[in-house]
Image 1 (cartoon, helix red, strand yellow):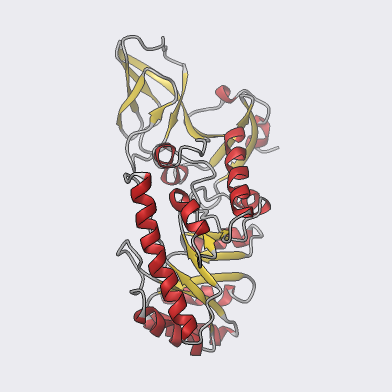
Image 2 (cartoon, one colour; image 1 turned 60 degrees about the horizontal axis):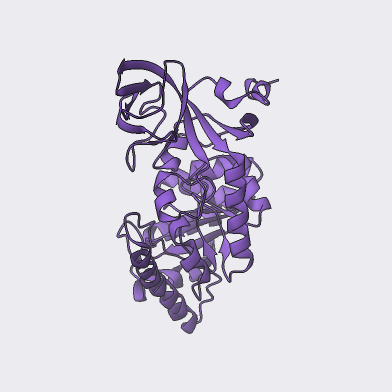
Length: 362
């Protein structure tokens, strides 16, 4: 029996800390909510597993109706393929020769798809696929808002698509345009920005179709824009990822999703009446997006060091002693999960499952 299996059934507060914890009731509610939405939407759900990097969770999403998954890089995709997941879209450009060769080889044993925004890379990918005797599925990456990657909407996307269609080692599958999560915008602003970006993407797809190029996939969206993207005419799939576990930022942006993730910590010092120090710092809690939020009222995170988290305790706050356990909710779940080897799933206050974060650090 592995160490993880030996913990099943134990009270969650007996875990050695810091420990990454998921509330199964909250997670399963998010899973059902998203499945119900996409069951009635014109678009399909393709969850982005860069959020949790955990094959077991990806399989749960697929079992709930997702048509495939997205991965943030090639190594992450390789972990998912090894775990038996076939339909994968990598949402970061593959440009290194060794990685292009790996993609070409993998295309012969999986439904792997990649994005391209460079004519030279498309040529190299074509040559590698021909050498491997495979055909790689390709989406043209269209820059619809972020300025991070992608060709311009319209003519530039058309010209690259025309090149891909003519390449014997490539199979043109469609377009991808990521409009961003847009944290910090109001719901009205977020919806307006999302629709503007999606219009650019869908208009480009219509241009390609007028030129005789079929566009079976138009991939876009995020957790914070899933309702808009999922019902936008012409969008075929939505790349929501953080919906499954949520986090501090998504609790504000999408309040109908429950926060299922937290880091369980232990109080290791009470240096003053108003200060509580826990055993989780930046090595186990990402500060990306801001400091974590204590689940217990009366506490506020004020600093994260490497090994220590410092909390401020209000004068009328709860009594807290050294050795007590506290839950901290990260602002950005994805970058926090990447700091942990395991996820401990709890139900009724006890460990119900232990999942390996098999793609962490990749």
